[in-house]
Length: 448
Ligand code: GLN
Image: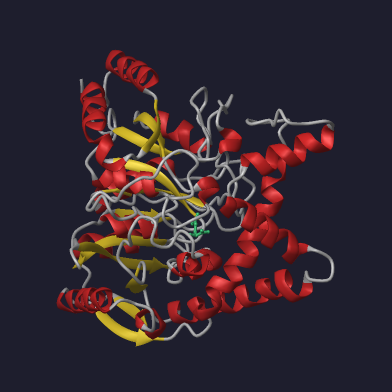
């Protein structure tokens, strides 16, 4: 009944947000029926709960497009590891959520299929690339979704929609079956309305996976444990670069207020510096695009999805399928990445970017010698208008200036609601030490 009611609710509200690419109603009802027969275990808080899945996570026999024309008809023959875990937790996947094509973007407007709308204001973007994952949860269609975050794609849309989004530590959640964008940065994580739900969802999807060579064997604590609201004595850092130029005054105000709330709760909040974070966006667009140009070679018109009909020979199959199948933003990244990796430019771009990445990582390590957490805005702005930045890639890229350094350092980062500016939600970003999501959840819960 809950699963049926969920689909009714989705259908009633879908016009407002346009969050889903695919609804898998038949499969979901079968999973729910099997669960009814099996019975719900009392100590599993997630059993029977509907969940939405970003469309770059492969789902057996359910269309998986990464919001690209090149995968318009791709039905995978296997499940991503996170899907195995979703089924093991007795969650009920209800469909596949809209996103920027191959997770490249910050507004969900590069999707080949549709434009998702912000759950608070239909004239604004939902953020991206996990825009469908955030809007569907914020609109009350589902209580939890999975997104992916390469440079901010969980945190920025969570921020724009006033919900909780967690990008776990790199290696915490298996990437097996996540359609790769930038393998050294990508991480799957949950989006929810409450902190506790988020912790429960991360419990379900975390853990070592032999199918992902970068998956970590470090043990997984119960993230929902210790959510008491008591954070006395916690040491919190606020980087001055995170309230600098380009951060909207209303956003800054909300974050300073959040810092005061933490002080009132008994934590200390002090100003620190992350001097190299200003190079984050430049470094990211070299590294992420280089990795993308390599990862996207597999889409050749032969193995998956779209194949051009307009061909004379094999070379045409490759060239025309890719030319017709990829959108502009994806092509921009492939060109940028191929250039940075090419002989003659490799040292100046890709290699140099790797060196600066180390400096960014060291900045964080230094702060974490003395602090438990770092806070700041998730995004410098609230949600912008649909169409407003679509022809201005640089402005769009700047939307992730405060989230990208976290991916470059492999650290966990989350966004939680921290009030409103201009009638739109502001997100507070909380950054933790590697594999210390637990402390982040404690602080997030106390704030909530
Ligand atoms: N907006 C950033 C980009 O376009 C980040 C995307 C992401 O995290 N997947 O690359």
